[in-house]
Length: 252
Image (cartoon, rainbow, N blue to C red):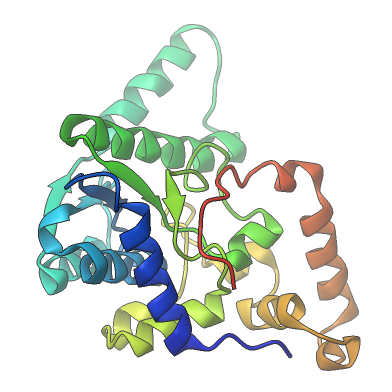
């Protein structure tokens, strides 16, 4: 099984950030803070590389977000700048425009799950435009491998930090950074449909990550055949391949 040296990955990402911003003066970086492991780890790395005053953490609930306190905890822990933009009004206004023209999006999961993600990315770029900053992507290799992201939503940004690391490796990196266990080991979810990522995917990240990092089929012989087939199908889906629209990130 291929392994990534987490200590070296930590240093590599921090150096990558410094080099990426080397010719951009004191421009800030904008990042969505969901309270999950990916955005928490990214925000910590950005703060380490650039300093807390150049990092703007944006909370973007769609109405009431039950775990908004986790987002607030990240911002307070890192002592970074904050913005709170509730996208509920924009989402509902757009929905009403569809309805008034005879189109009902309410029973269409592709609409109801992807539209909030795209509105959030619009919000991040709005903050970036106001302050002359850049948007950090927070997707990881596991999500990108099976296309578990929204095209023109959470899969975009000006640069990424975790696109070369699996979800398992992101957790290890969070532990390496000394971040709170309750954030780093939090059950991942999209915060929209009420289910965990693994419920939606139909397999665990542990299974997916072992498949990605395998060096022989023997290493995944205990993973059910139907799970392996599903992972391969999702990876080969042409729509999946088009979802990752950012290729500027540290490679491992």
